[in-house]
Length: 302
Ligand code: ASP
Image 1: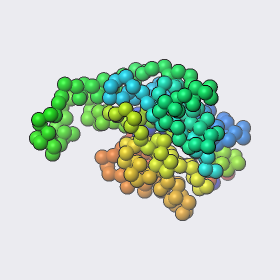
Image 2: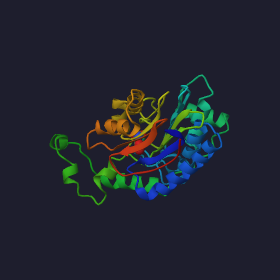
Image 3: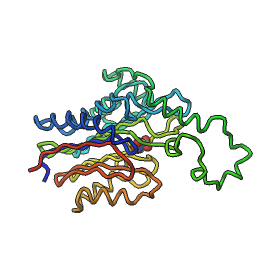
Image 4: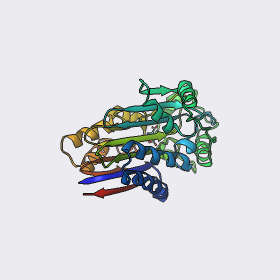
């Protein structure tokens, strides 16, 4: 049995070489848990560290949209008492997770776009975003090189059933173009048995303005209930269709072991869809993923 603990991930697709950032975040969260802190504070502390890291696709490291200039971020927090705070497609702020935490103290669950940014300013949690970092520029450069100068107008019929992936001949791997990944999440169980989850992301790639993934959608990218706290990562549209986080929670609630519940949920996705999930409950903690994924965990067993 787990007395208290935390699991943190750096997004499905992130290399194990980035585990150090997740370890730092897990350490900070664990220190809070050790001293009697609330699970919500622990996951938020982990998320802030990863938002500020710059390598992960969240906060300062967020991915650029298709215009190569716009950054829109999603972040969410939830605890097992049903308190939820979410910001979606928010621009210009360094730590969307702090804004999400403030939303928890309103009658609302989700604030989006300009309203979310103005709200963050009014609550004093709108430290300015530093602008696209080197990782975001690199990701966007991959998209630009692959898509730039190519038009499918007039060729639509010929291309419709063409297996582009099988014929890919750019230096940049195909998977890096239609990407996802490096988003961040954290789940925690505290000494009082309270469960919480946090998610933060700059989205997937490529993305239109206004696109919102699973990370701010309750039951899909995140869920905390009486039995577990769960965070997902991967192609948001696919995760939303399967309501990944709620499925894992409910399986654990019905008696399945934490790792088994995560494994079964990940196995429901086709092999072509990258997906990862982390979960914590009183019965244990797990991280399951079908691609590389940086992650870290710290816990105190009974
Ligand atoms: N799930 C995120 C999204 O689709 C991306 C990720 O997990 O990396 O917005």
